[in-house]
Image (cartoon, rainbow, N blue to C red; front, top):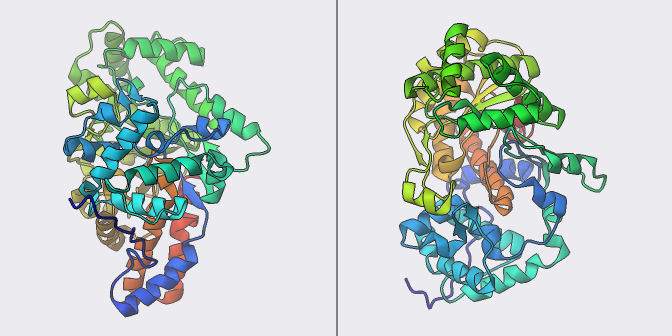
Length: 477
């Protein structure tokens, strides 16, 4: 792969903007109006402990490579062993200096695998704009880039809080288990030296899946942290409501849900009680467990109308598709695979009850692009409570974002969408990914101006709203 060559990073000021000169001129103006606006990140997986401790990041590999499933999956497909990339049975592990440097070399030697992917775009921009690196990764430059980043990480301006401020992050929401005590969030909220806003997000998925082998133990732990007896269905609901209250008390604005499908069909109360009791005895069937989980999606919407937490729903991902990968390297190691999903019938029970409720906000994401214009946009274009989640995960990529805007806008407009969602574990990619979204939205809006479907002042106002007004309103910030 010409590894002996030393190429320069190509991070052009007009990257991702339209190529037609007259459209690019408008896009530049729109992008200039938004590029320095604060970042609102209402869905991420950044550990809040990083900001509490504010300790230097240890090395380039543990920061940029080992936690990032986008990077791991492509390197794995190319033949790399995840154990050599800083992954252990329970997730990322801290490698010694030699191991971290060896992992970094594997990344750089295989950098060509990322050509044409958003990962290369994120890496190139992060290398250039965060660290000032000018050479592209390769076998020839791996050690030099590692040393340059490692040296930077020892300086105060590269500590987590300094980067948080440098990136212009105004709000960062984390993803948290109902059992979490949220101590890091309390510490940050009480710290007068930290001026950012870091919010927990209530993620109860595993407590709603009754067929899990560890479910009975989980509801026992739920009883202990909530101080509510979960020995029957009524107590289970009360315990979940208590944890939602606790999360909201600690700043949470949303709950987050991802299951195999989008079903929301409610059960009769007696049936819910019966299935719950069977699960406690270890006698629940797969069909009963699925029916209960779909019932709980409607119950979650009911709870949201009462406590005001935004409900975000992103179903239809086959988690841990490779069982060997899961056993050896834990969850989030790159083998989650998207599935097709149906929304029109699945969401009708929930929307029929709460779709126009003034106190429900439902944000629906999907990786299945086939349903944007057929299902999600028409529903968000009618129901007052529903918004379409802007691309995330497999579709937070340039072409996918362009397809999203084209498919959704004609039916739902801009203001029935959520604002950009980065959904990242890679802290340093947050500004790069939000900047990518702003550039692409500038390009899309510029096309509307060039074809006389929007005036320039309407496009400027919309570009600003997509970054600030819309996510602030949707996530009740």
